[in-house]
Image 1 (cartoon, rainbow, N blue to C red):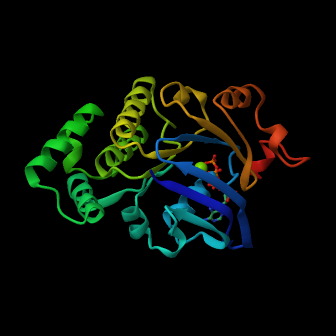
Image 2: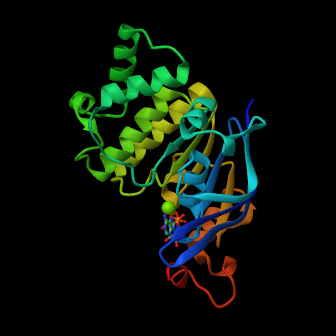
Amino acid sequence: MSTLEIKDLHVHVETKEGTKEILKGASLTVHSGETHAIMGPNGSGKSTLAYTLAGHPKYVVDSGEALLDGQDLLKMTPDERAKAGLFLAMQYPVEVPGVSMTNFLRTAKTEIDGEAPGIRQWAKDLSAAMKRLKMDPKFASRSVNEGFSGGEKKRAEVLQLELLKPKFAILDETDSGLDVDALRIVSEGVNRAKEANQFGILMVTHYTRILKYIKPDIVHVFADGHFVKTGGPELADELEENGYDAYLPEGADSESALA
Ligand SMILES: Nc1ncnc2c1ncn2[C@@H]1O[C@H](COP(=O)(O)OP(=O)(O)OP(=O)(O)O)[C@@H](O)[C@H]1O
Ligand SMILES: [Mg+2]
């Protein structure tokens, strides 16, 4: 049983216009086996939270804590965080020209497990996982995400999730841009991985449609840099119906949150 604790996190970035505070006291606890959905307006800081946990150097932590089983994530390098069991499926997965998917995945697996997987078993696992995600075997020899369509990139993120078996998976809009079949295939991949490994899931999404496949135990509203409401799955339906206006500072609305 593992626990991810985020305590009163304050984070800023340096921009041309000066310091921009993005996270303003974000707190959350996730246990193994739990699925948390995070919903909130554009620009409220959901991806910033994901990047901060993963260790993106642009995001500066001013105060607060992030602990994985009591270990201080914020003191670790991004690869140490991955080794500790944290996985991030990015909203906009990056292309890595010149590095094949096979090489990337095997290297990542070797780093995380501390030893190289047996070559035959690995080839079998990789090809089976790709088949289940309905990915053409040709993707294995292509460069990571290079020229992949939006939906193909999301599948590649879930392929990593299935093979790397983390303790906590942050899925940042893994459902965005997927066609109806891809949404089901990707969701089934996440569910399969969760069934096998009982990890905790933090799933950022704008749409309730994915929640039909990946059932959240807890739904959070994230607005203006922190969590403002927590509820059960019914909260997602309420948000779809009424939007975020009730959770925004007075005078703001979902649209002006973009400004
Ligand atoms: N590196 C950066 N430089 C400048 N501003 C940034 C940077 N990263 C994030 N921001 C700003 O911080 C705010 C939060 O961004 P973030 O991507 O975390 O929002 P989000 O909640 O994930 O939104 P969306 O739902 O659109 O994905 C935005 O106003 C964004 O423009
Ligand atoms: Mg985002």
